Amino acid sequence: MANSSARRRKKKKLTTRTRRQGSQNRYRTASFQSRFYEDLRDFPDAPLMLTEGDSWFAWPVNGNIIRKIGKYANYNILRLERNGDEIVENIMSPRQRSKIEDALSRFDFPVFLVSGGGNDIVGEELSGFVKRYRKNMISWRSVYKENEFESALGLIKTAYIDLIELTYRYRPNCTILAHDYDFIEPSDNGAEFFGFSFGESWIKPTMDELKIPGDWQEDIVDHMLHRLSQELADLQATYPCFVHVRTQGTLKKGDPKHWANEIHPTPAGFELIARKFLPHLKRITPKAF
Image 1 (cartoon, rainbow, N blue to C red):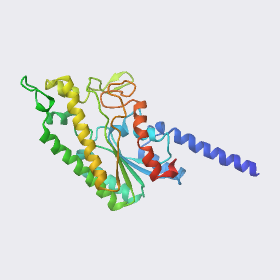
Image 2 (spheres, one colour; image 1 turned 60 degrees about the vertical axis):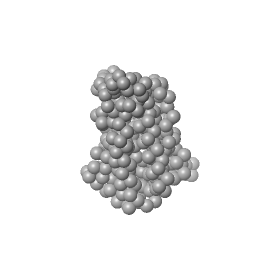
Image 3 (tube, one colour; image 1 turned 90 degrees about the vertical axis):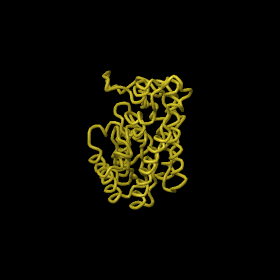
Image 4 (tube, rainbow, N blue to C red; image 1 turned 45 degrees about the vertical axis):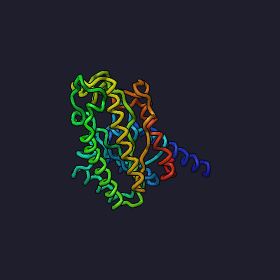
């Protein structure tokens, strides 16, 4: 009887582990919210995690940071992220803010992972930070609109502060983890799934239209991403509940092993980025590992 009981317990544990390792696929077939409630029922002892952000958390097919974290740790995750979201216009919009507030008021999340700020400075927004190249211009700073970018960066930082204070109001023991974005190489590689193209890339088309030289394009984007990283570091120094996950320099620019397109990593690249979260998560929620 004892041996039979032990076998049943072992089988149940294996089933749980198998499902957790399959977490990369299970989120495709059900809504994030319904899957979260199923996990609460099936894995009542697993730590909770709230996630919100952009495509680095939500990118399909090629994987994303949250899916890759699921390879190493067991969490019940309520996922609110969406491809293309900006932290100023979308994540902290009244509608999405209400969803975050509702989640925080109902569940005691020990960790809240955030991916935000990248979409606020690429795509259509990028044209507001650079001007058309003229022959008398001698460096990338000649076309870079520093005041305009710093103003936008200020709005991003304010949105993060709003998010931090909202979280602390409901869950003072919750730790927010937010990553910066690795340095990219402007290119024509847009989104592609199953051999089909879904639009142009996010940075180079705007830069090309403004006649900005190729090497300047890279310098400008490097500078903007570095400044965003600096602001996240400043938030960490100011708010004890906020952790800046430093990922810049993890991926190699232009390496097809690391980059699926201009601004999104490959599955291998996303896994390298996800590993940067693990030491912080192990410290906060060791039970998940």
